[in-house]
Image 1 (tube, rainbow, N blue to C red):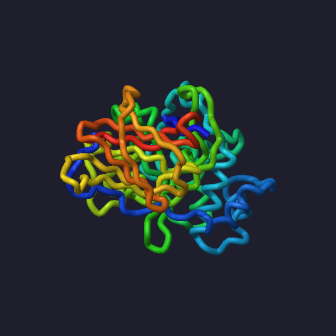
Image 2 (image 1 turned 60 degrees about the horizontal axis):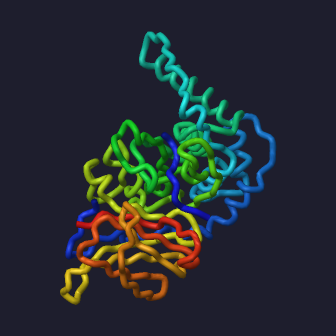
Length: 329
């Protein structure tokens, strides 16, 4: 399995103090039952409302209901690269009131959702609209969030090039972030082929992780106590927190306490890779020392290290997967 990919739709400053995303990715095993419903669902249905009803007929908890929708959408909707690269021309219509306008918008959105269900494919806006419609069908408050995204293969350049859409759901008076598009898989061969790979980590992702590769147009949807500016977005680390086996659940950057000005990166894994390699962006090898403490790996790097790419794999002789990228000053 190779993690050097970029997702769909469309210099991190080194400080002496600890800089970290303290939250860990929430465990997903508790969603085994709703996941099994979604993966094994083979009933016929007529429209989004009936689909929502059938998927949730044995689920009472709203978190389980949202999860079964996320998993079903991720498992059944394929990313439509033809639509991405050849978008339909914008259409216009005449209205005589605000009420009529909202009615027309709702009508067109319903037609789009039906089309997504019929063709079983779409782009990020289609994924998020379908997920929202399913949630609303059972009374779950859900919004569509528009913004920008970034990943290993497509770093952030501008909001226009990196456009993306995802969702947030409100359950028990708390908002949670969801990206069914990235939950479905990723793109390969520079937006020419869809690689299906379920990524449950994009369901209820902690905001501290989500902000690393999702930047909403409205700051309130960062769901952070202290919001970030768009200028900070491309300077953050990129962390492989979605795919097993070498999924990163936490990270931190600290100074070496020995006084030699070396830099330290701590990565916490679900499973520690047996072998590592660190390079700069020009793929020049960077020497490092490592210390393993349980599922934590502490890398000590020379003070001259700046742009850091961390690879991991089964052995130094096997193909390594890109796991993290840091810009250090």
